[in-house]
Structure formats: structure tokens, C-alpha cells
Length: 344
Image (cartoon, rainbow, N blue to C red; front, side):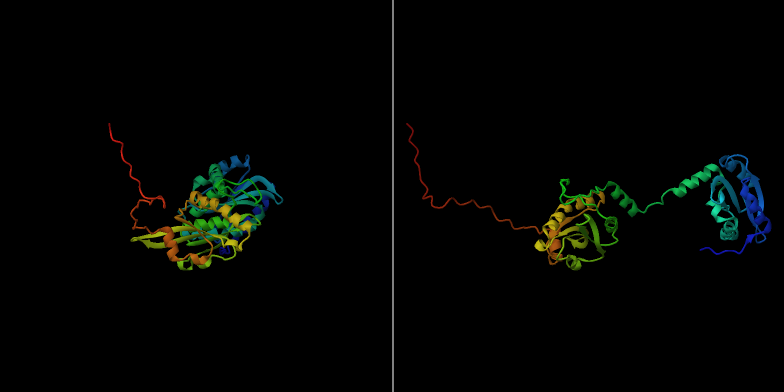
């Protein structure tokens, strides 16, 4: 909340406000003089507001001196004509004047009647005090704010996501499985995972709503990975595993599908199995997160560091036994010798 300066409109200005209600005044300028808000100049209506904007405002503007300009539009609300409130502060104005005009603006709006002010703009260069400049500023103000990289990625995924609400009994399935939509929180978590804001994500399927939800995110290591696997429900896990292998430091991405066997219903097992393909496709092809290894486990205690290392870097068997000629069938008797028929 900004601090107020205590500067208020003088008697002349307050009296002039009453003359602005009949629609004859198009624009007037107010300045701060000797700790008072004072009326400087005004201009009457000549044409429609668009033409008057370019024709009248330059006549009242002092490019070197901060001021307030109140410009009457042609539209009306229940209180009367609507006004555009312009705070003109040149870029090279002294800092003290900038602060005083910024802090006094609320007082002037209140004394004039804030209910009649349709828009409030700040202008620092004369080019913006033209009709073209004003319309451009309105367009820029209405434009959405710039997105962060993570928000841009999330928007891209949402535009390209299949987002098909497919029921368990439906026959409209993809070739790779059932494509349930992923919640926005889940998508954002995976984008944060991509940018290394956390090392672990757990996803679950809401079988009633047929949506993939986020269960949890965290910074964990491989020694606590197994404890995250529930023993009564299926889950998908995405884990970043930092480790060294053959002298190289690696950060491998592991996708884990956990399903505790027959502790879950047939429907749950089928849904988790069918949704696995579309989810990994989303991760790899839309979010562009490279999965180095996909693992399936029943219990969390399987996910030891040795097990994950063996899955990522299988040991090579250097001993290859020499090929031996297979033995002939048993019980075929002694080898028979045949003599060649002498040539005549």
C-alpha cells in the first residue's frame, strides 16, 4: 500500500469537478503547486473521443512537467460519463517529483470520484500520449504475462496431451494402452523433476475419476527408494539416480512400475499395466525426459542399490565356454564300417 502525501485539491479544483458532469469538458490537467492539487488548463469537447484524444491532449501537455490528465470518454455508467485517468511523469523528472505524484494519485482519484474512472494509466514518453500509443498500451496490458520455461512446457504438454477420458469398460483404447489424463499438478511435478527441483516423483491412478494423480515429490537417495513403494497399491515412480560407473559420473533416470501382486484387485492391476505405456510416452516424447531404464517390481525391498546398478549396467560375462560338439543319441550301437565296392 502506498503512503499518502496529504496533498489535496484546492477549492477551485473541487468546484471545477462539478462542472465536468454535463459532458462538455473533454480533458483537463491537474498539477501539484505549493502542496495543493490545482487546475491548470482544460479543453471542451470538439468531436468524438478518438479525434479529441489526438487533437486536445498535446495542447495541454507540458513534456517537462509531471501532471495528471483526466480525459472524458463517450461511454457512461450509472454515475455518468466514464473518464480515463492519466498520470504523466517524464522519464527524466526528478525522483522527488516522481514519488510525490505517485503518492498523491489516490487522493485525486478519490476526490474526483473513483467510480467514474474507467482506466488508470501511467505514461512516461510523449509517444504514448497519442491514440495509437494508448491503444497499444491497452493491448499490452490485456496480453497474458510472460510464462516461465516450466509454464511454457506445461502449456505445450496440455495442448498436445491426448487427454482422453477412457473408462475401464470402454473399447476405445490406444494401441499402447489406456490413455488417462494426468492432473495439472502431476504434469508440473514432472516438469520440475526435469529441471532437477526434486529427484523423486510418485504417481497413482484414481480409478473412480480415471485420472493419473501426483502422490508425492521429494529429494531422496537410492537407499530410501524402496521405502517409498506401498505394499497394497500399484504406483509409478520416477527417480533420478546419481552414481559412478567405470569412472564416469552419471545421473540416470529410472521409471519404476510397482505392483504388489495379488494384494490388488484385478481391475487395479489391469489399469496400471495398461496406462504404463502412455505415461512413459508422455514423459519421453512430450516432456523430453530420457528414461534410461524401466523397471517392474512387486516389493520395495527389491530396489536396492545393487539391483538398480545391475539393471542399468548389466554385468558382462567374460567367460564364454568353448563350443562342444553335441553327443549323438544314446543306444545307437557301434559305428559300422562299410567297404567300397572294388572298381572293375
